[in-house]
Length: 359
Image (spheres, rainbow, N blue to C red):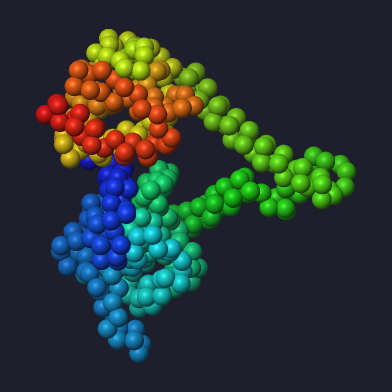
């Protein structure tokens, strides 16, 4: 299984079990251990590799324990402190990480609640854990841009020097992205005045600033849309030839339509996320190597054995209202309106039942 698929499999598990997890111990067993074992690739059952309740006396504090220490060649490389799923993760929750970081050889520490993982190092002062993380991932809102950096922390690719070298840039880029996101959605007065002063020659009265607050938000939104459209135009200009199924007409449709080949098909991030969600759901029924997809101008199809006669579902995402197309035993499709990609989880039982037809 590819690394990104392992991430989405765990993400699917969190979404399915979130409401049932109410304690730190349950968070550890259901989410944190699978992250360490399945995603990062460390053997949680080998205490020479992953030591639970790691003890390291600090000054007058004796017998305190950190939740996990990941070791390599008997040296501590990563420290992990967990909280209960849903608990906020602030620097105030990391007191033990601060103490242990100072007295071990670890250069990486992780604070997590099973859903959000914050990664720290010592960029600001040697052997002193930074107060701000250099990397953060939310398994319910995955930013695929940081996946290459997360891979560097896995057992098979662990590269401390590369991680530390990239940490500074990651730390500040992530903070700048958060600030940009905040300012573009709810610009502060100084942000508004910065642009207003460059395009408006009059006095920036309160009424003018209020007007430019909305104008700034509107301009930012249009600029982002323009950038997205330019990328789509470039992709279309490059051209691509991908297998395309003819789109059947009507709400209930046949899955056995002929395959047609047409260019200019764009696979969107939502379609890929939907694919990984479906893959995570049905992998318990059918081997993941048999799960494939075909993108078309009309829909994004998910199939077994890359066979158009073995459809699992279709994602109709190329319109304002998203639809999930599900198939009955006669392979007739019925489209179900969904609001977000995550709504696919509501149809998990149907998807698994459909996959079972092709065993």
